[in-house]
Length: 408
Image (cartoon, rainbow, N blue to C red):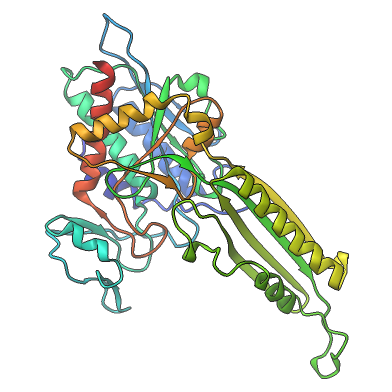
């Protein structure tokens, strides 16, 4: 059996970065490698109903040890893939023991420094042990910290047969970062009455609201002419793309919004004179505002079509997921159980509207109430990502406390 930290340091060595617009699930072979390892771990620990699907969804169960009353079956879910924005290959994690509040040099040769001058909240972790990167990759706490915390809980339960619990369902899913969102998890077969994703941020964070989300892909077809004779003839797709971008509100981006404020975000802009491709994500908690944002993108493209020709612009908008708050409001006892668990552990709950989505958002819409709980990490999706060891241990303790409260 491993500690939560040992699980984590093992999992981050797997390159499970997912890939946008892949034709397969999972989108990358490294996710298969980690999925097979999780099957081995669950089988080695003697869990029942261990299964891996054709799309690398891994599930297992620890059967209830309470015979005299009905106890709810509780699911704990984490995703195996890491984000697309930074490499997850050859992650070299290390532990900064007893952090004292100053700069942490991640990579001396590249002059990469994790500094409280940039991330003031680092001061909250003086005296704790921070798991950091070597400054060349992300860490992968999103969501391998969640995986480690779940497996830490599994190990504790198996090592303490006196610990009373109902059925414990665990699931590890692929491609959450590219909006697979647990589509391949068979809820009926999984068998949980309710569940939690461990996929949040700092200690105390609890989310049962999240963005409504859509993607927007715009293709632009320009016309290339020799620059020396281009007046009145050239239509640069680069320039048209910049003109389209300039139509979006400058104060409605991820960098200028917070809390319940939605945004438009151009994730990718590839262009030459002949062709351009822009990939956007559209986000808002309020459904009406969300729909209005999609309409605004359409109007911007229609305006460009009217100006330069309809044949020069292609637009595809796809809804990705919806705000779980609209469904979970009828199951607030699931939220209350998590809040009570935190309070019993002397954790100050921080209920926030999640500025993203989780497998739990989609699962809630499909009928399995699944709020999102903290893992303890910071600066996800980049090389400055870090997580306190003590935070991961609290994530494991929180899962155990939820099971304890349900058993009572």
